[in-house]
Length: 134
Image: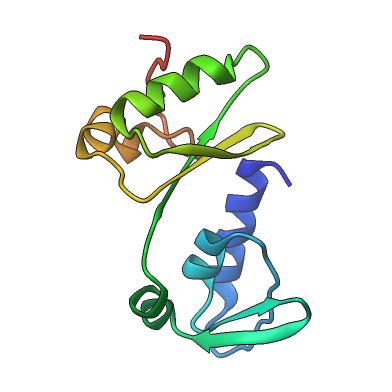
């Protein structure tokens, strides 16, 4: 599912979840964090843990994921070098379809300030995304 359709699906689920039980499976913790009141984690076909997002973060720690939407002209190596400039511990963990996802134990505040969320290309957002080539 492309990033825009995924976010539209999130909005639909959030709008209609009140008073309902919805069972959702995902590989994305950010999706589970946003949509789930309780999160169950399975590995090798067995339930490993269950709890609220806050409980899981306190118990297992917190890292950061930065997901960028790319087009066909994207130079992944150049983007990775730019991200590592602000957060040396960042690693590219996914390069699928039109998304690049980086994981890091630390996300430099300068990166968050340089690329504020209001510039992310999400549906209904009229702000321009920053030029990563700078």
